Length: 506
Image 1: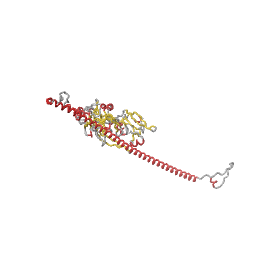
Image 2: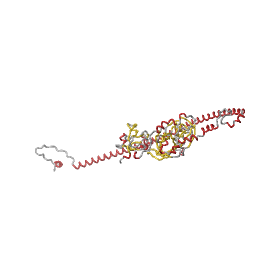
Image 3: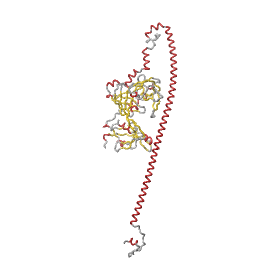
Image 4: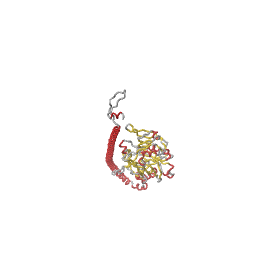
């Protein structure tokens, strides 16, 4: 029995000799009770942890529910905003249409009045001339008889001022018959066939589908190796394959030299050695005119691939010289308004004056059930510098598989609604950047948004892929990125030396 057992049994032990006598100490808890106490504390601690975990889970669930409600509210707000914008756009279009019709009616009334006045004056002059002629015939009837076979050379008085029959015919031709002009000018106009990819965006993402399109173009120049053809940017937008059909019906694949969306202009290139001598003999470069000296009412000729059926010709007059036209995408252009029929497929075709000179690139038709004979063309004098700049750009020919470029970036495809909701600029959204890749060395970071590559606008990952195919590995390109800094996006320009995709090791 030890010392503690003795105390428990109420027995006191005598201290050894020389040891001081001490008071009796309290009894400590025994071993079994200590174990039970520890188990109880552990169970209580476990219960507290479980309760805390339940509380945290409930708070997380409430936060998720709140976020979902906020997301749903933002989606509803965005949908309501889009509905309001669409309603406002339709209202704006109705107001424009009403204003246009009001102005058109006023112009027609003025024109009708002018025609009436001119007709009345012409009638009065004709009456006077007829009276004079009758007097002359009565006075010199014998002279008239002797000169009947010579009316094409002199007038009734023999004064030599009469207009010849051939001149009458020439005057008539300039107003109604443009066949001679068209026969020469149509050799500089081409049809364009396009196979492309269209993208549609919604809240749930982006979908792509294949499209077929048709347009027109004008041969504007050449150098030692290639032929240049001007057309509209919207004709070849999203194009994967571009085919040009010449006046002799020969079809040749074309490539893009450059585009300018602001002027809705694009220039295509074709290698001269891809054309046969027969085709080269048939085609002609367009003769460039001066759209700055056009006058209201001046006759014009439109040539283009209307409805994709091949070249066709329409005629009309210049209805307005500087018409500001706003399109469905809210862009505005200063255009010539013409009465010549412009139909789908005419876009990019030639607008000519009475001399057969190119004075415009056909652009669009005002489409409305209540309006007819309202077409538009880009004045040629306003785009000469742009056409020359695009023509001199390096040929945009897709590179070979061995030369295909590599950046070292993974992207995230965001919907347009996501961009709008969170204020993210349109572009290729960088998800991650590989270590030691060209993108990392150039300074591109995750969450950057690539908005341009060598000056070409980028609005999505698909746009970036479409642009990269024209740049060889090993070349330097300028990349424009929007970077989020202190709550706002700032534009940064970086230079990246593209790698080669073939050198990527898995």
